[in-house]
Length: 421
Image 1: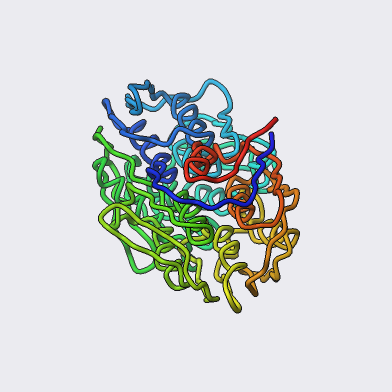
Image 2: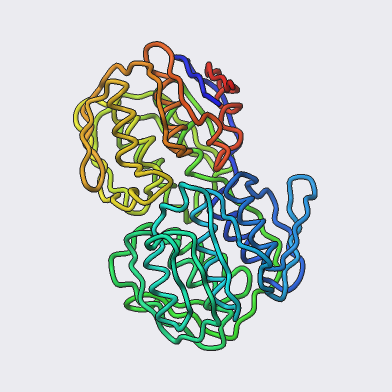
């Protein structure tokens, strides 16, 4: 499968795609709640389907009602076979915490890409709480987890993945004892930990922030609650940046008060010089006099690939920094972003924690291998909208992991985009 992109001018309005981060957490929390929950407008994509399948193996049931999902949760059971988390790092990290609650061995695995994702910090944290946790692949999946988790405290690094902390928070509420989670390195992607805590509260569980981390009270139970998945700023960043480069785009359904770290994309676009207009839950972005700027991506790492594309069209030097944790995503996103933009003619230099870009550069259409990474594919597609000639992107259906409507949405805005076998 390939994605073929040609230069295009964009104009129009889109409805935001549902948040992948919120959907993962909602599926897990609803599956742990004793009773029936209605999830309105969840994202149904490759990653979230992996979470559904995993929670079904733990005993939850799911059924579709139009765009909603009805989830019946309750008593946890031991999976009858290994849980295949496919390509989803969020799935395997959240479900590892759930597996630690059970006095049975649970195997969690995934595809070749997932088997390169680091899990050592979470393995160490669970082991510290008396869980038998091990890797069959040098700290990466497959994992074998056997509880029960009876620990009172644990330590965890905060600068590799906030999903480790989210896993500990969600699972610790169901233990008998209180849990102290001590974070030993600076916490990256903090807004996503806050999303986890807010959603736990919605489903009836209490957490508290401490000087060095978090405390989770034991003996709690999740209660079924209807929940509407908000729009996803991470996915919206692609059409919004496309508007800044190639026309004028409006995305609706974006809560201006949402905790998502990638909500900062709106401020960053304005700092680059794009035209940004906000009104209620709608955002409109259009062309402007783009100029280089420095962006700290510690709390919004998913924006790195698309902001690097934006920077290639800005006058002067831009620096994207504090994103070293991107090296542990579906691909090494710093290296893959720099690689595809260099191939298209960009003046870009890789740095340990990000990159430096000098622009503007007239990009050239090229054949791009996004390493199976959905965010690299979508960033390359947006770059192709302003490049000379045709851009051909392999792994052309990986966008479905987080943004199933991506090609259709671009075409609705007037983009010349085609998915071909």
